[in-house]
Length: 268
Image (cartoon, rainbow, N blue to C red; front, side, top):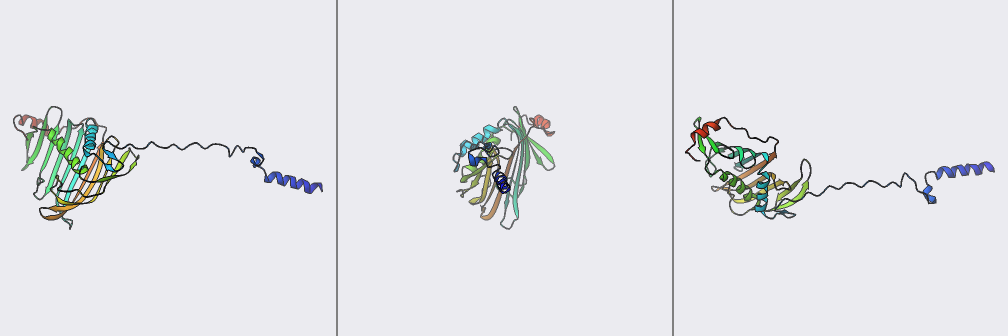
């Protein structure tokens, strides 16, 4: 009878191996405390933005201008107007390389039918802290002008952002951290009246979205809407992207020296 008793004792030891907690002991393999998972800090909202979207467009646009005043960037904007069948009426493409407000190079080209937007027009602007000159192609040659009110260019950029964020109702849809922290906005309602940048009336928004940094820099927006222009139905799309860059200088085009020499008395 000793052998069966011995087998039972061995079986009992095997079955209870690793279960010392049954008798009040602690198993070191299960008693370790898991390391807490790091929770990322929430992305703060930009000035003028709340959970409900843009609450103060003036504050937001002012923050955008303040944040880009000493930044190096490349901005691209494309505005396209089409008939409902897809035929393009006109398109405006603008690219701007800048180092703050005072130093930048801008090139804009407009193609399409005559309207409030200049038809088939193209121009370049170069400016630094002391001089601002423009070059306009004219029948294969260049015409040069000295910009008497360079600040007006900055004002137009400010007005364009205000025209969007003050008149398109938005809501805040969330935040992301990929690449850089961003707050995302989505359009929720139609603006009233006319879009000043295109002259389109009876505006019905199809989609509007924007991404803004916590400092207020509008990194991008995409805007698509329908309306009437000169009594005809049109569709307008506008895309904007602003990217930071490491280069702290703006290349000076070859025509600038000639423009400065020829524009001592002319103004644009």
